[in-house]
Image 1: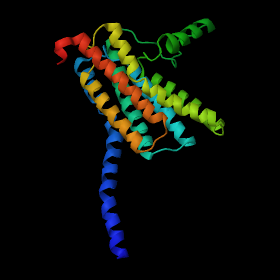
Image 2: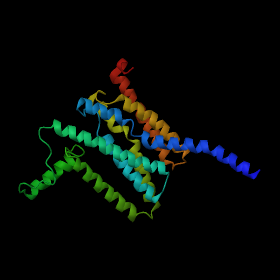
Image 3: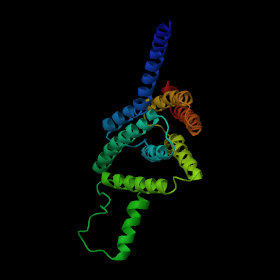
Image 4: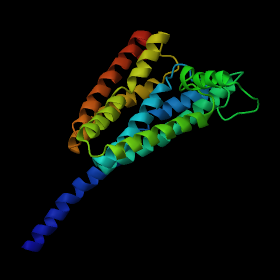
Length: 256
């Protein structure tokens, strides 16, 4: 009887484990799917107009912070894996955008490594400000993005190591990672508002954002993730709906 009971337990648990594995894979790789239509749109039009590259910035920063958060407060491996997948996807998207932007510009921003001519200290300071402040996240060389992300990761990693004993820092780190991610739709919302149009933005991407964020929030709850995770999901759903309302407002009947 004991053997039969154990077998029944295994049979009962196998379907639930399989379903959980499927949901985990959907979460890990499903997050990058909404950006495929946008990537296709950018390559087809050879233009980034209408798409806010700050969406990529938000996702890169939030996922780097989330990975650092995992080292001091471990959570589901599925959530961690999704962060790495998303970072790779955003780098691919930014690589494409940078290539197209460089082709479109007649003159590119000077490289920070270039030292072909001697400069005065004042000129060097002005060039530094122009590259890293005035043209922040609008660079025409992909290596500038990589350098910034490397410095951000190094700084955050060192701070996390130094303050790993502090619960205040740990909770602040987790909240920052998820709050930044929750604001994912904000740059696109502002871009649409500024242009008074949604031309150039993939509506399929926003629809996938919405369905994905609903799924993600349910997944967070089922995984018993820290409270910051489901709150982040709910905020994202709200922004997704706001962007969809913009689509209805700016495109009207053509949206349907």
